[in-house]
Length: 275
Image 1 (cartoon, rainbow, N blue to C red):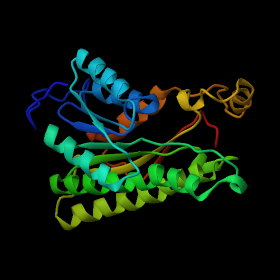
Image 2 (tube, one colour):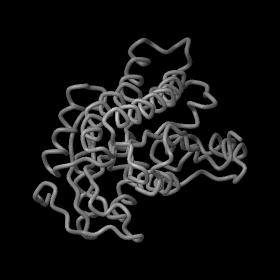
Image 3 (tube, rainbow, N blue to C red):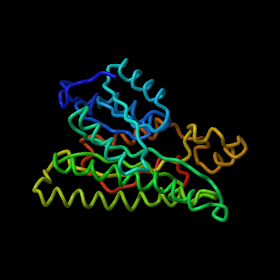
């Protein structure tokens, strides 16, 4: 991948490219919703650091795609459930790009079983990636953002964290836990900036929000039988699955400097399924 001097980005911000000059780390950023987020933030001018765990080929393909379109992209391998890996990836992104303006905690897994058949390993694996990983990444990112006086953290939760789902007790618990984690970090970020005298009126601020997608047409749903998907669609007022781009649009909005008065919130993107 192309190596660029840390911190040197001569692109000027504009309404068409509101994230020009920003650096965004997107975990699970090379596939599904994560890839859509990476593409959208890149289109808005951000330099992308795409995190991945196993599929290096796909990560490199995304990086090549973005760079062919004139964006800057690096890829970073790591296991989100490992505190060591998370700290290392944050350090890598800072070393490569010189700054980190945006963290999108998107990486997630499922291990679906009814509670009566769910083992402790099934529970712990999903909680470690989908909940603990957000903490592991947010802590070092937050330290950097507080020092700089601005930043954006966006946590990708799920409608399952709001309404539950049969066979997904571990996933629901993790995604629901993100709501409380998001609001707490949002409060602590604002408090830290206040103590440092950096709550500038009209400045970009340091915000922390969550996005809760509904049923989105990604690989995660590819294995679901068509008859089950049909039943799900009937529960959605719009009678269709969402698109990854629907989620990416909301993430991009939250990352914009103009969204500095929005923090500690959960943004549902589910076609009205839980209203």
